[in-house]
Image (cartoon, rainbow, N blue to C red; front, side, top):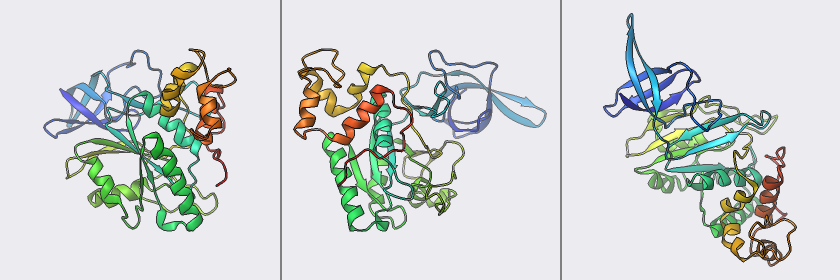
Length: 316
């Protein structure tokens, strides 16, 4: 039988068939996907082949094969640098929720996430959430960041998951697509999903006053079918986002503004760091590309792995 993985809890997977039947499945024996060393061989969104087995009164499934993936979002653990985790597979688009405070989403985190989505050709929309909470200075900062990423080519929407402002725009983009919602714990993923699909009634929690960060309410990634022809993947909050399996000379290709300029550099193998006659450095000097984006690029290329949540955009 063929089905799609809707939930993964580590050793068990909820798989749904085209007919809408759900089965709790486990993996047959040792299951490894060629070329990928990850903590989870099967991810939400995967299309799998499974057989149904009956043991006593229980009917479960055994997964024997995974179909080729269209794409996937993969991250490297901050501390376990050799371990990777596939967050979800076969995604049409990702909505990355960004907040200026409670918790703060730093631009290096945004850029690391965008590099991965660009590498796997997954459209990413930036949702600047909690705009109902910001003062004028903070709103100006949001609009600065939205203008920065819009100029590069990313869709940016200011929203309030609490009041519903601009949520209809998100809902319209979701129709007929499988969308993943991502961001730090506490950015409002579950609140937003509940506003879009109240029937799901996902658990939400208040921000920790002591640390001004969210607490994990989603333990495992899970996919839901919505009543307006969309699928949504809710994911646990992500603290850090490590880049996986990218050579230094490939990273610039996942920064669209750097990719556009690399053909004008004097050297074909220019890494845009200290090389002479570098078109990217010239564009930076002329304020044609963002300093914060360039700093993110340098941090990723030079392997600075311990600053995932550092702020790296200039003062406004």
